[in-house]
Image 1 (cartoon, one colour):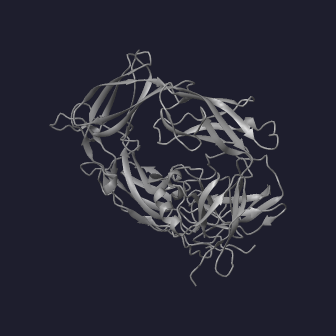
Image 2 (cartoon, one colour):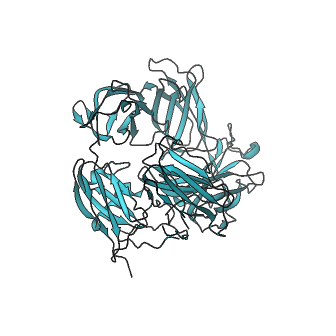
Image 3 (cartoon, helix red, strand yellow):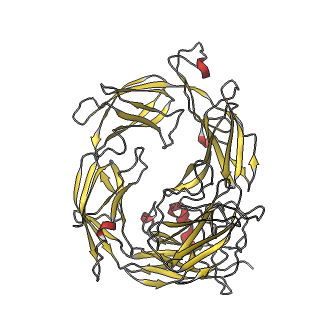
Amino acid sequence: MPRRKSHSLTEPDATPSPAPTPRRPEPILPGPGSDGPRPAGAAGWGAPRDGSGTADESATGTGTITGVVVAADTGQPVRYAYLRVTSGELRGWRAAVTEANGRYRLEELPPGRYTVTASKTGFVSVTFGQRRVLEPGTPLEVGEGETLDEIDLALPRGSVITGQVVDEVGEPLAGVGVRAMRHEYRQGERRLAAVGANTSDDRGQYRVYGLAPGTYYVSAVARFIDGGGQARGRFGRASQVEQDMGYAPSYYPGITSAAQAMPLTVGLAQEMTGVSFGVQLVPTVRVAGLVLSPEGAPATRSAVSFVPDGGARGFGGGLDAQTQSDGTFTVRNVPPGRYLAVARSGGRRRENPLFAVQSITVAGSELSGLTMMLSAGATISGSVVFESNTLPPDDALSRVRISTRPLQTLPFGTNGSIGVGANGIFRLTTVPMGAHLFQVDAPDPWLLKTIYVDGRDMTDAPLELTPRVEIENVSVVLTDQVSELSGLVSDGTGRPVSELTVLVFSTDPELWRSQSRQVAVGRPDQNGHYQVRGLPAGEYYVVGVDGIEQGSWFDPAVLGRLNRNADRLRIREGEILTHDLRVDLPS
């Protein structure tokens, strides 16, 4: 296989182009994971951390991937870089660490398509085949007994943003949490997400490092909030106004509105200095209330949190409180605004937690008399059946997991997933209120076919849950009749093209939503072959896209632009279909 040369790290295009213009690969871009690149060594990221799974040593084969990891700026080998390889053939992932000469070797791989990612503190994580920030990488097809040599990765050094945080009179603030944020797609929505963080020192200085090139917004949140009956600054400096005060979350260049924050464009391995700004002291109020159990008794030792409208936690040290023995609580230093008031009994590990959610508006005066009634979540029970021409293996049911996914992010998390009993029965308890979609994880080759609730097809429809409701007679049907769409992507001369993304999505716009089963991505491998498995039967668009951002394919606005130049085809249940894509590239 020819050596893959280094890429230059570039920013993603603002709008993906359905008529791709792939370039020859150069060093490689940031980013393991479904949400895009993560800077190693910043905000807790770095080798060998991974929360998405566990190492898999069970599946073995005779395939091998080898290569060298080098620093993109010097070409020198990077020692102790962490290599991770993932594949549908593995239940988790495999890992290796580079030697002093930068070499790594991943062995005993079963046949399949693999994604290789490298990371090291102080560098930006890289997935083989990436060319731009937030793009997915190129999968590698490994056959039985095959060795892929020279799968080399060039790690760019992370960029840095530094500055100082000061208070309302220009004095340095220590212990302030500073975050570098950028727009990323999360659950199909483009939103600001923290990708690097640090805390200011005794001089108010901060340094956020390990950043990929791109556009950032810098925010500061004071972890101490002083108040107590009259306007106070840091260290309790009193004013003449009888008003609680607190430090509001602020954004560079010193404003409290995220919409008006100034963007900062950071280049490759650049250190941007002088990003200094102040946090603003704003009037705050106290919010007092009462939490009751479902029976109407005072709920002791319940946690209460206020989440600002939009879901971003973290004014000061956190808008949190715990109920007293009489069920009362007081949350201090709350800035004016709209919030979700959230109460939860016990900890996250409690077997049967109770919770309450209520919208509140905080104005300029103290708010009291807020009453929150705890309630149990919903219960969902049913059975799992296999629809196939062959008998499933004995352990098939034990490897099936059932869960629900809320359509809106919940401030208290989800109920997790539950296994299925040997008799095929499952029971989900304490499912939070709101609209949810079912999620089913099953062992290969089984995939979800249909979910019936009281005879109604709810496979792709949201289920509206209310407190204490019990939903029974849920039937989950799994099938091994799995569709497969594959083909070759080539240019006008017939040359295979791997430097783009193949996007397959339903022709029905109602199915263009986060984590839709009818939206799938097939990144071509090193030979230009793409493959998408498990699409439900239906009509689909197929298009090759250059420069598409990770996760943006669930955005209806993006799909609405891409369908204009897409091919159209029909996929039937269990059908094995070939569809080649010819891309006209500029000369």
